[in-house]
Amino acid sequence: MIGSFSGISYARFAVKLLPIAVTGLVLCCVMIRVVYRDSFRTGQILSAPIRYRVHRPLLIKSTIVSLVMLLLFLAGVSMTTVAIGGASYLLITRRINPDKVYNSIDWRLLLLFAGLFIVVAGVEQSGLAKAALESIGSRTVGHPIFLVGVSALLSNLVSNVPAVLLLKPVVAIMPDPETAWLLLAMSSTLAGNLTILGSIANIIVVEGARPRVTIGFAEYLKVGVPLTLATIVFGTLWLTLVPY
Image (cartoon, rainbow, N blue to C red):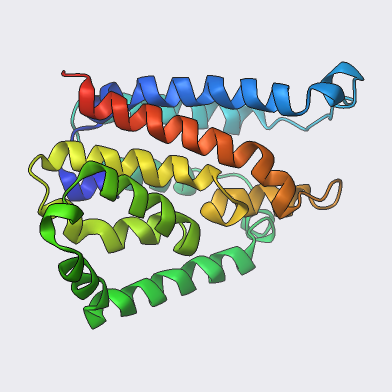
């Protein structure tokens, strides 16, 4: 969505944010290992391997389509066109009963996501967000730290995708729009690690794990809080201080 709004190419977006993503992944692994070191030491983390039935033709076809899409993204072809083309090809050439796919969809989460977009659209149309930003002042609103902080806060109130929609007007007044878009992409994504509600992906994982283990809100914060603070601070410094 940010790539569509900003006009930043897929390759440049990846080059700017790849170091942040890799660093964040390493920090995540380290923090989980440190926080749950007793569980690792006693072998509680290890479990019996789960056997899955692999649909090899679909796996090969999907892998090839994904690689072709990646090459087209890097070549500068419209991301929307490539995504629709790849998805259409997989649907047209499918060999799996669609009922199996529909049964695996969590319709409750889709309804939640749709509801978030409706609420955010209402706030945007009412002018409430614009009025709040004007009352703060353009100088404060245009500061990178303000953008990152508000993005992190909103991402945990309304989820990160609606947060991006609400903050579009802020990016328009920033002196360096490209850096502003990248800061918004970085902060809204990494802020999703703060709480379970910070990202729809978190909710999907927690709900999926529920049959075997319950991940509580406080338990999640043990890793979520330090990880989010560390990665967002690093990402902000990287995007604002590293010239390239």
